[in-house]
Length: 94
Image (cartoon, rainbow, N blue to C red; front, side, top):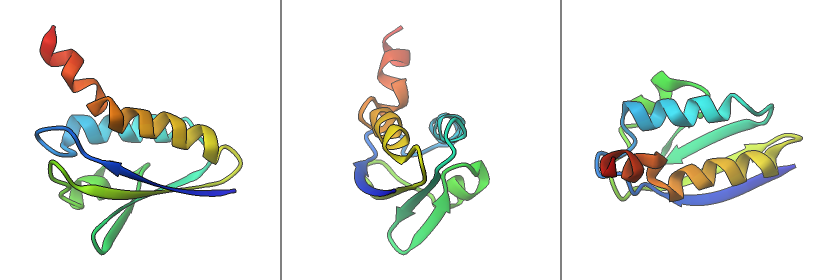
């Protein structure tokens, strides 16, 4: 199964190290191949170095691809991270 979704980066610092690490940690929970595309470049969501190299800023529109047996579950959980701003709003409030 392959799923393609769009996500917007709502974190004021973009997809910085902590947010990217959270994405990698979550992606590793799934067997599916997960790809993040920004403009003309893409990266494996399970590779912190490759995600950081994309230099994804605040407000960026990304295309996320999920391919594998647990693609639907992976897409729901990872899209949730983007919608929640990788929980940074919760961290800032505490």
